[in-house]
Image (cartoon, rainbow, N blue to C red; front, top):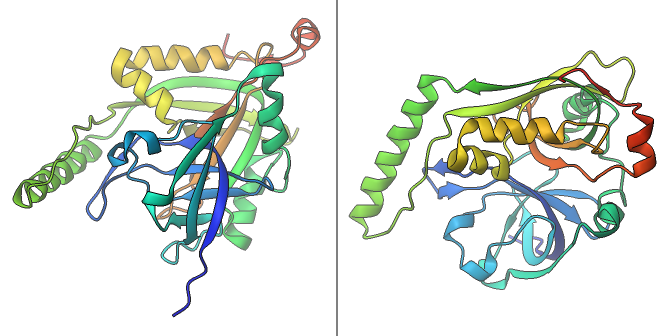
Length: 271
């Protein structure tokens, strides 16, 4: 059977906190843009088990052989064919108010939506699962403790994987359960938007909470939610098992110009 494999150049803009996997031990959902600006999801990615020189950063170009993930009906989903051929290239800086990053992210705006509800409509019609959502107003930011059932499931899976890896003389890295997650309530650009809640799955924010305390993660999100200071937008992605539910898999926050900051036109109900 012929399988289409392509060599892709991808700018990474999203990585979620690692999850345990019975099949892959550990995976990270990773998303980015192709050269033409089209969004793409790479899954599964055993990120922490990759060689150090293959552990790409956010806004770093990578070159890698990929093919469609036949087990995932979402059109943006691909998987890596050969890890040995993954090459990490240049990192796109934040200079000139993220201008070089903007040139890629805004190259194709077909996946940019004025409201999350429009992306959900596209999900139902065409199984679209990734979107760029600018924020008009922040309504609330809070920490939510994850259900005890999720903790038990995590511990059971971790212990099972550890026993399995011990049996085959393999090594499993320590992974901490994230007890609390930052949730954001916001309104989109569309004036008819009634608001949305979503959890922040971004690895950087989750790792900040794990290492420095969950209140630090909350404070960081509150800082980025200053819409007079930042052009805040969310990279959102859905869940394979619950396709109409979306989480925040990446954060977009270039500084506003001095003129924009002085105008103070952006609403911030939180403060």
